[in-house]
Image 1 (cartoon, rainbow, N blue to C red):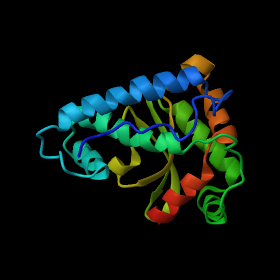
Image 2 (cartoon, rainbow, N blue to C red):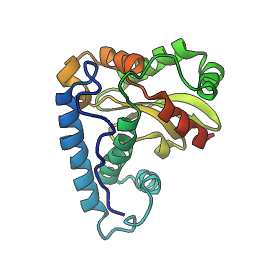
Image 3 (cartoon, one colour):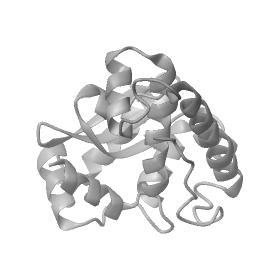
Image 4 (cartoon, helix red, strand yellow):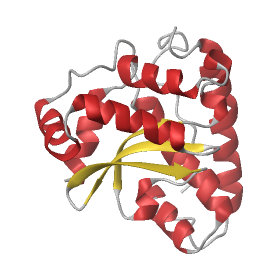
Length: 200
């Protein structure tokens, strides 16, 4: 299956001031497109060409195939990253089943917020901070480069990109401020809840 770059589910200005038009244009139109282009090159004629994205991610990690991990993995990550944000998102108001799980598995929203931000800040270099389901419970994870929870036996339900291209235009080197803005103002909790329901 050929990888395709989807359109953003909102206008380029929709997430401002927390994520600017300029960041979205570079991040979506240039960086995500590059992962799609390179991913298709690597998949063409390969044993993985007709597999699902999830299957390719897992196989790439098992085979230690860095090219697929970092291009197909990043394509998967970004497909959801755009959906995990919306205008007027963020904060602690979320669907009840998800709120209940965050309370029981992670010690409540405030602890989730501080642990999620800490995971993103603590990821050295490029990578992601995640909220994922493993063995039926929510947990905070972090991964380097294009890796994602699928490659580590878990199901991602929320991820924040901490590669510099995701925040440097708007926040320069202030990664903590970017992560706080993401949690407080951007998260599309409805999409997170949908993925959570499928994962448990």
